[in-house]
Length: 498
Ligand SMILES: [Mn+2]
Image 1 (cartoon, rainbow, N blue to C red):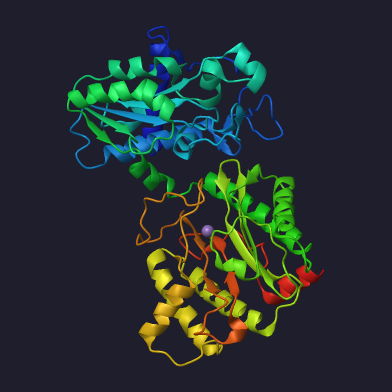
Image 2: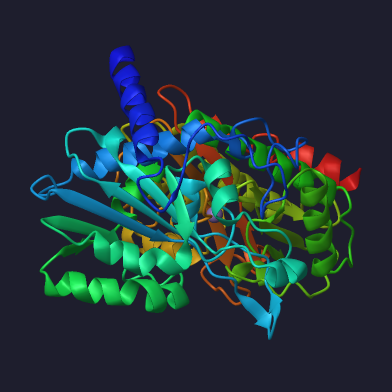
């Protein structure tokens, strides 16, 4: 173990020295740090956020280098890959999206590109060239970025440019994004696999200007084009300790925001008020933004799963369902709580709520290696059915098959999803996959009973409840990352009334 790392280090140092002056790229050497503002925080400009050698808060140059190495190793182990002499991995960064004319939305980087580079500026591209199938660490990484433009910087702020990107990210080489097409075409020799997400146009402009012509040439040569996303999501699916720390922080932030928001609840409050308090609190506690448009749904509006208009008055006696997450330096949390707006559960609300809470705890206990989300979903469905029967919510006795149809109707979603850089993280990974240490999942059973649902007693109609936590799988007990967010009836009643 130790020796292979040492050999990789020696090779890397040698290659860096060798490549100085032998190509047109800016190449990583021991140059002093670029000490000016870039398009993202650096240790020099934002020492309150960044430690030395971090590319993004909490993730170092070495961490990113390891991600690229591990990814190369992963694809080299894929079927039929080693028969080619060379692998060329191409991952585009996001463009700027505009709200109107020249007014941009907040920039959000393509998470696949972010994961491999940490580079937070638009219209860039990572290329990894692998020429040895025996030594993953001997690959070369190239980051293509827009060159600095004083006029654009006047309006949009400083940018890293070729030297800043090289210095800050720790890739091997950087160059002008306009040279990308020429570079890629120059690499089309011999037996080669190209890895590119041609089905996911995350930067249409760059695809058309820099990639399309290259792909056409590659196609004529009979080059195989393979998807980057499948193996990359396989890798992203298992979180490193650094990633777990960021996710724990994102979880703490949203938990605190829920506590702050619950304590401001009162009958007659507007859903938009709750949304605003939640967002304000999350940002005050360190989130850069909410992870997604939150659901703040009072009363029976909770039965609309993606209710995001958040503009209605919450009546006395009803509950509010809030589904929200914090975005913290590239990682997200995703929590749902449902509470009585006046601070006191009615008896039917409490019965349904506790039925779902017992179900959720049972499902969380199953979050261990060897189980799958699909299996936990089965447990959720059976338990919810049993609970509905036991609390006396059902109007008449049912056969098992009728009961499971009813539960599917009352809970039309799965028990949970993968979580990480994206809220619905690594969607290509099937939920039948056995859980492994380092995976993070949400566990979110719910019941949504329509106002005119005649199969249940009247007292339970028009109620929608979901309880969602984020769970880190370990070799031992599951770790509930969002365990600071209260969910016991007594705790919620105390905080809401407090
Ligand atoms: Mn969720």
